Image (cartoon, rainbow, N blue to C red):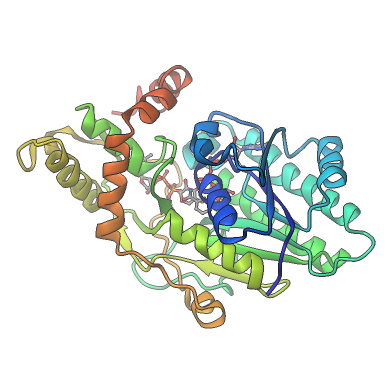
Length: 354
Ligand code: NAD
Ligand code: TDX
């Protein structure tokens, strides 16, 4: 088991990163945590309002491609671990604007790897560079089968190919320079503070506001959903106990067809808002499919269970109901992140889709 005094988290103002920072501050009272985040449209400091006065937490606004800034941060804070989450993360945006994905996800990761290697040149010791990746690097499954850590990479969108490239870079810094690394590849996360461009918060908001519910294609695509706090726990465990150079798949064993999930969200939101059962079904709108839409993702998470003792802690029904409650009770958050630029995004993505 490793112990860290000073951890650099990148992308901590985003959805998963904010949960990771909270988890590290609670579980690791000996550690200081520095959050480096560029605050793109997806980064929001209100996601971390409850920890901002914690003396073991610091926020730095900056880009992971800024080599000089990162070198200075390594010198100022003498990090002994990096947890790298910063990324452009939305597949639809990657189809519209791939270059931003290549810059942040590929060049940004290489910049961080170089900085860690240089700063730790005197000896790697127990230090670790932890790269957070996605199941999408493995491609798309038909009705059967699961992605294992041995599945060959077959990324099919600009997003997933940029994440696959970054995974390859991390492994190459390990093999070439000996940089100690761990990688994890996770399925779709859900929970509080997720930007409402992603399926679950977008649908909750649209059901609440009685707006059309845009379902791509026939809604038959399948995703495996994992509670974001379970992902944050898995990250904490892998960071401290994962074997150097090893990859861990993280998943929820919880596959849902998109259309079934939207029906479940309609049931939960209508119930919470006191509407008659089935009231919002009329909002379902089948729209033009996502280009290159992957059919199915599903994860074999037996390695992390066997080697590190991690399994999901919560049943999906419970997590989804809590998530719906969170968005309905945090309407201010939802309204603030969807004001301004979101309107233009929504119009661009969905305006001509029906
Ligand atoms: P997110 O889009 O909610 O947050 C990304 C964060 O990174 C934001 O705070 C943003 O401001 C920051 N960022 C973006 N570009 C940056 C740059 N150039 N420099 C510094 N900061 C920058 O993403 P998320 O859903 O929290 O995902 C976090 C990580 O987990 C990503 O690496 C993603 O690929 C991976 N992942 C996500 C999921 C999921 O379901 N959301 C599943 C598996 C893996
Ligand atoms: O409006 C929509 N309608 C719709 O039918 C949206 C936004 C999505 N969908 C479908 C597309 C997918 O089949 O829902 C499914 C889930 O879509 P997203 O929430 O965009 O997630 P996905 O594309 O599966 O990718 C997510 O999981 C893996 C994250 O965004 C990635 O960052 C992560 O790596």
